[in-house]
Length: 274
Ligand SMILES: NC(=O)c1ccc[n+]([C@@H]2O[C@H](COP(=O)([O-])OP(=O)(O)OC[C@H]3O[C@@H](n4cnc5c(N)ncnc54)[C@H](OP(=O)(O)O)[C@@H]3O)[C@@H](O)[C@H]2O)c1
Image 1 (cartoon, rainbow, N blue to C red):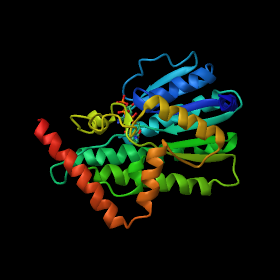
Image 2 (cartoon, helix red, strand yellow):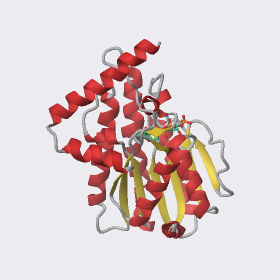
Image 3 (cartoon, helix red, strand yellow):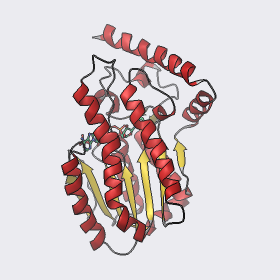
Image 4 (cartoon, rainbow, N blue to C red):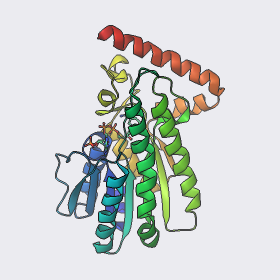
């Protein structure tokens, strides 16, 4: 794992959503290579793993703009106090909500936009000045759902399309500076995501784990490798890569229709299971 020595350049790592799933696995992976780093985790619940002797948990509901602003002020102090070195910001917190309008709870949909979109832009913008000075990487966790409209996960897919496009554009805005972005697009990954999104049974259980899904550890390892390789965009897993590649060659209306048929079938099965 030669690429992991790359992480010695960072003196501060800020991650959102390290309390479970992909975020928690990223923290664990980073700790194996940079155990003494100043690590700041932002989520509502405290991760039940040790964050390291310089680790700190910032309890925050990132759906709340006031809490984002307050926490960002604390993070700026942490960056200020940290030894010389680059900053790694990982915008990972997010959730989905499975169902059809108008049955879905509109407040939950709007909170999703606040977390998946607003908080990502707000937190990044607030941390940009010291990051531009020190250099570093901004990792934004999007999804393969970002590549086409996603019926029954309509708002979620649209938030991830925003993250993907915004993150790639920001990378170009930052060209010529010491800062860059990495956009990560995981496919179905074993985590709390599907339960939180309202799935009775995660789709990968139905597929019998035929290679469509990945573990959060695999996604974390791929993310760290992509950071070290200086990649701008990574779709995790060859199968997800193929699906997004061939999907992008098809007319958008047709891809949306096919996605709708697959997700509608899951929806009917969820109802039968209840
Ligand atoms: N699992 C998948 O199949 C999959 C696929 C593609 C992309 N993704 C993306 O990967 C990212 C991580 O998801 P995951 O799969 O690891 O799911 P997860 O296990 O449910 O983790 C979600 C994380 O987001 C945090 N979070 C949720 N609401 C929050 C809020 N209001 N304020 C602050 N933090 C909040 C949670 O922490 P608290 O609850 O403690 O606040 C948790 O740590 C998400 O952006 C998701 O969209 C997941």
